[in-house]
Length: 98
Length: 497
Image (cartoon, rainbow over all chains, first blue to last red):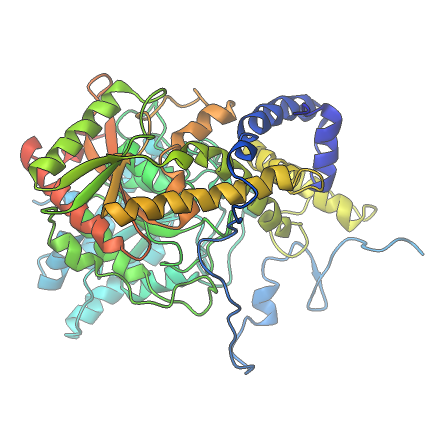
């Protein structure tokens, strides 16, 4: 089993959208390495023939009639927005300059 | 004069219904108790005195008008800060939701209000319910009322501590890997994880959606049953909510009996890491079940030894996906938006500032387990283990009616002891996790104090899915026998603070 390196933690941080601080990288590398080393044993036990379980219940889509129902007002929906403008969520730039 | 904070929920409701006391007096007694002692315990993140007194007045008005009151009308409750409450802050123990005022009630919150239960406030918890000690709260730890230097369990340590320090007779928890049962065990209280799908998750902040289950916490088995009945049942707003009648839990709690019942002792729940005093009290509980007429058999569930490993892949994987919604764009914290940074940069800075270390660890662990190249070995294998564990339960329940075990391998550990040692912390959930993976119902109730440290020990009872009533039938019988043996409920021995 490969050990978790500082570089891998940095990569996981980027994938997870966590702007990790430099001092966090070594600490998390050590801890994640220990945890992954301990949980890797799950691959020892189940054979090819065992089906995976993703959920305790047999899930099916739940449908309802497509009718208008009461919902939050725009004011309620925006009541906790970090920034708003013209009854919309105001967000930082999403696309590049051009 | 009766101390209103020492009554059970059932007694409180009866006294309010008869007019011997009023809901306002009861609410005020609890608010006074919180004001007097919660500085020491830190069970609450937010106390809603105004809301509680208004709800209590409404109950008293109903009674004055001669309207029929429900079985828990006017009884105060401490609500875990993971359920949304309209107009009342909901933080999930995280800085990322500091100051967030939800514009809607969770279904569970709505049902509490419909039952005329008086919500005193929101209780402390490990951030996003990730932890076994409440030390992962961004707002500081909660203390165990039995010994203020020790943890009250987690993630629902605020709820369990509120019960054990008589700040509320009822509380709500959520149990993803043991977060209702483990806090109940280490504080000498009762906690039930209902069958998965038994209580709506709508408005309950998601951690691991295939495992998360809200449920009742109380000081007695009957009180837990009354609360269970108030919050359970189908909810069209939760697609995983079971559309079936609620098991007759109150009737079961009123008729405790184990005669002729087949009880299984899982032999994998013992051995290295189990405290001697915990095993002693557990073995006495098994002996008690025999004396009460149960037939006890030992059986083996070999896959359970892999449950902890599977859980720490499945829960982080689901959490890494669920917590992606905290992006700093629509609600909650936003950090570093200085007009020059992109949305992605602001999101990364927000999450870095808003999440604590355990949440970051689990998000990265889940991201790792789900990443291409590792998916089959980690997440895929863990899902197969989940199948094996479910099969072990099915085999066991073909032979016995319920399973019993210690709830936790040890009593409450000192605050700080495992705070930066994740693997040591995870071991606290060794016995509770299998029921979450399979979706079964399970309860923890007090079975004595460990001789070596004088701290509470919990007995876990596990029943098949949709047989939640068996927990209460067995739990009520055990509780009655122990209370007779001890001469009083266990919590009478807790420090008065």
